[in-house]
Structures are given as structure tokens and as C-alpha cells.
Image 1 (cartoon, helix red, strand yellow):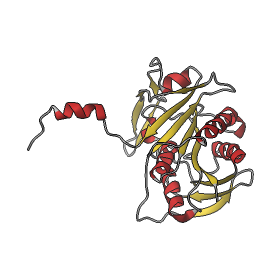
Image 2: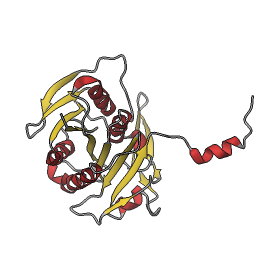
Image 3: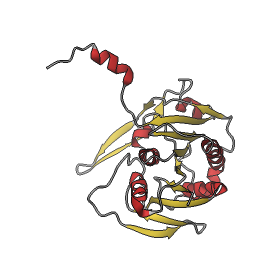
Image 4: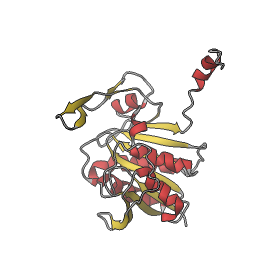
Length: 250
């Protein structure tokens, strides 16, 4: 059967995944496999040699879902191993409550769920909304329309191996358009709290170099949808030439 697999990192009952599942019904059958609890900033975590509880549940509109007590990447890995019929036609992750730009992608469960999909040879897209206060399905109206438009385009093309699309949508009801972007540079404002027994990482939300034209940060700041191709080859190819000049020998 042909279907779209929907996942996220905010948890199976988050409004963003409901909005995304409803948007994807335009293209046919939808299956939802998502974390039981919020797994934001879980990164590309894969649970091995440990029980991963699961249960069947329903989204607020009655859509059947498989709730996985694990990471977003676990949701995709377990699906590929037989938790649901495989393969899907497409994997979509989100819609995340908050953006995933710059170095955020290394932390993001939303993005790494899509990367796990790419590892299994499935075209995958991550969707995030630049609004940490998006608490209703209606707050995701623009993001849902963007998701439909991007998926329409994706179904006409193939992806390079181990590559995903990372899509970030600005806050509000409209956007100026879509821009193809590169990763920007985040500036993290984390602070340490210590009560004598426990550490906590706190601080203001990250900022970034918003003036760098052509980056995801620049695009969303200027009210464009950012569409960034991301791939799993982390090799610093430009640095390799310099490394050869180091004359590294034993």
C-alpha cells in the first residue's frame, strides 16, 4: 500500500502533528507513528537492547496512531523494522512548535526523524514553525499549506541518497514566498543553574546571524519560508585538502 508516514518530536498528541496529518490526507492514506512524550532536542538517538513500550492511540480528530515511548528516530527505525507496513511513499516530520535552523538540526528530533527516514531510503521532510506558542491546530494553518505545497513538488522528483529537506515556516498567516537556503549560524545563550544538587541548562532562546543573506535564519527573519537540503555526509570536504598538506605520518 502507498501511504505517508507522519511523525514528530513534540509528542503524539501535539497540535502540530495533527495539523500535518490532516494536511497530508490531501495526498492519500496517512499513518502516524510518534513519541508518547515530548522528545524535543533528543537528537539522533536510537534505543538499542532496551524495551521500548508502545500502544495504539488516536489523535484528537480520531486518526489512529502508534505511540512509541522512544525518540523520533526510534519511531522511524521501528517502523522500518516492521511496526507498520513498509515502505511508505514519503516521511514527514513535524510540524514542530519552534524553528529548527542553523546548528539546531544536530539537536532536533524533528530533523533527525527525517534523517532516519533517509537512512532507510525514503524521501523525508522536516517541517518546523517559528512559533513556540503554537498550541492549536489553527496556529499551524500557514505551515500546513506550505507542507502541502512542498510535498506536491517532492512527489515530482527524487532525492539524492541520504538527503532530506528541512523546512522552516515564519510566524503569521502569510509568507513572502519560499527561499532555497543554506544553514545559518546560531548563537546559543545557555546558562547554568546550580542548586547544590542539580544542574539545569536555562537562558534565553538562541539568536543568530540574521544578516547573512541566503541562510535559513535570514529567510525566516525576513518572513520567507526556508527550504534547506540537508544530507548525512558530515565530511568537511574543503578542509580535507588542507589536511593533506599537514603531511600526517606515523
